[in-house]
Image 1 (cartoon, helix red, strand yellow):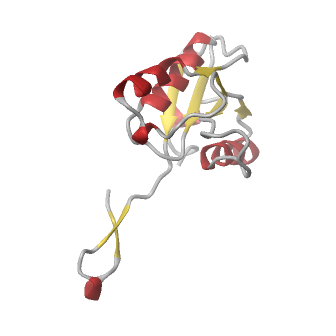
Image 2 (cartoon, rainbow, N blue to C red):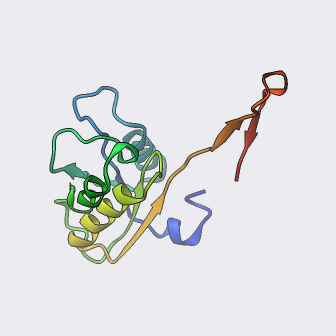
Length: 136
């Protein structure tokens, strides 16, 4: 999808949203997706750091904690004039991605695109008819 879409194809770097706990191994799904885009497409892998060592999932935060995510992330690389792609493994509130976008812009990126490669599924409520359905 990244190579087929004209905007996404214009990205020169990928910024994976860091996981909630840096001590957790393996790395978060978002980081692994970023590493894969780096390896397969040759996009520069840009490190995104968190100001705090551990952060709860945004879906479990209060409104004030979610708003603080806008200033949670740091990008030290010089992205001046670049188009970059922020990748996360899930999108619940948008605050995490917005925080990384803000950090990328502070590092000089002129265009910041975002992608969340997820597949939303649901289970039918009747066990006798249980099946997985794709929801678009």
